[in-house]
Structures are given as C-alpha cells and as structure tokens.
Image (cartoon, rainbow, N blue to C red):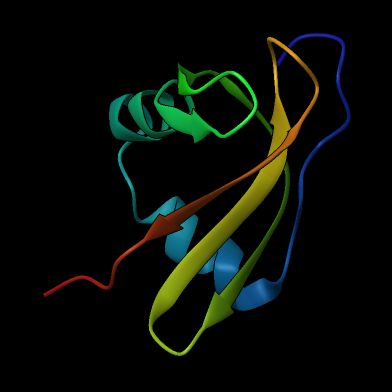
Length: 76
C-alpha cells in the first residue's frame, strides 16, 4: 500500500492475517463490497480484529472513501 500508513491489527488478527498467503491477501483487498459504489472495489486496509474465529478487516473504499468491511471466515 504505497503512501499509506501500516494497518493497525490486533495481535490475534495479525497472526491470522499472516497465515493468509500474500496472493490471497491481495485478492481479498481487491474484492470488497462498497455499499456506496454498489460494486466490488479495492480496499485500503485500516484495522483488523478477531471476533470469535472470524477476522474482521476494516478500511476505506479506494474509489469513494466510504468505510468498508471484509470478513474472513475461520480456517477449517
């Protein structure tokens, strides 16, 4: 993420996010639903946390600046 600050991930979220291969991280951040744009957009990652076994990534839509959220389900 050129020109942006590092995302603020909780320690648990950081561990979970690091388990995701880099190619998959990129795909995840490039395919987030924006309710304002009403389509899949790229996300600038801001924060991450765990809720139970799910990783919750929050950030902003790179197209319109709206807040977006991406949920990553637990590993099976």
